[in-house]
Length: 264
Image 1 (spheres, helix red, strand yellow):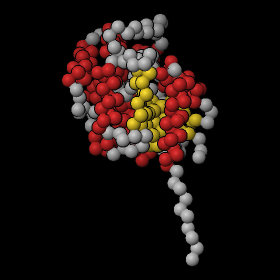
Image 2 (cartoon, one colour):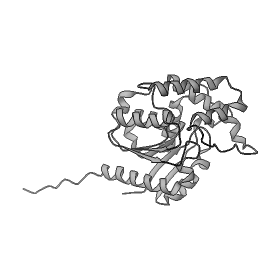
Image 3 (cartoon, rainbow, N blue to C red):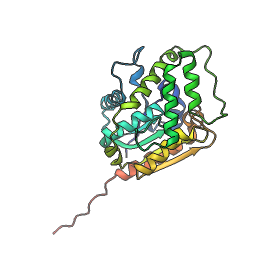
Image 4 (cartoon, rainbow, N blue to C red):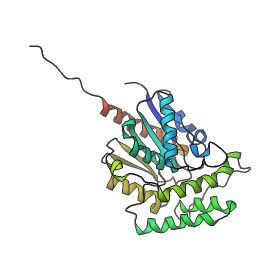
């Protein structure tokens, strides 16, 4: 068995290296883990007609450039939604899928609470940029959770984030996530969930994916974490151990036992 190969997609806030640097270090040198920035932020403004398909194409280019025929895919938040879309369109390229609080998982089978929450996300469109990020973050956690303060001074890349998050929210409204193809995905799926995240958001997504789609689904809850202090940044060693087990099990399942033959 060769080295473990994985592509890691960040969410809509931090750049990939800032999000995953600690996790990649914890995974060790025998894991070829690539922190891939979102295509969404390649320029100062979101690309015209950007959608999750744009991110899918970017992952394919990255894998093909490295001549990776198959690999593991990890996605956090908006990157998790892109990873789900990739699994639906290109399941043959994936050895496994890992979702770190995927931000969206299709527009069907929503509970009343999840529907109500997404109406609040839609209302963010009317807010000015200086109010947008704080309101967006508040929706992702349980009431009373203390959120981290914004960096002072803000890094240059932060100016792109309100427009990028709005682009995600818009594509979630009408993106055609193929339900039947997603339900046919049989590789192992890992989902990390923060115990302090909004249960009507990421908790419901985890429950829906485990119930409706993936037969090989493992949910791991991090009781003290939430969407904005996620385990890949705060507990990278623990998450790295879980991901390595997840990947090793997936790769072991792909090994074909030799067929014993007998001479005449």
